[in-house]
Length: 113
Image 1 (cartoon, rainbow, N blue to C red):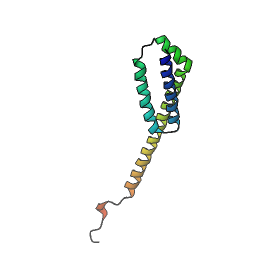
Image 2: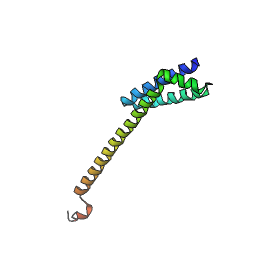
Image 3: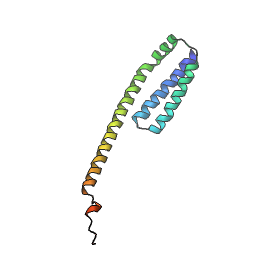
Image 4: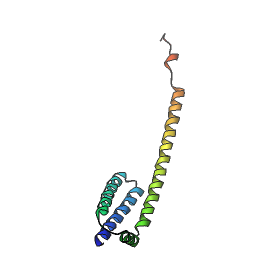
């Protein structure tokens, strides 16, 4: 049980670091932290423990609250990035339309020049 507590504490620390990286838009570090977190989850899954032990330790270290906070941060960041992409696409479309209106077509060129 003590080993599970240590691993869940490490998981909590990684989750906090992920949350900070997400808030600071540090996506390079975010990818690395998520990979470490995934490896830690796999290692925790290999341990033998009861569901009650897991729940008790998770409640002691406030893991559920932190997970919910991270989930909300991911959703908000995704919405923000999606809005930014939509603005970029609109700007690109406006730019293309503007340039298309004022570009000279080869049909109207005078061959006598």
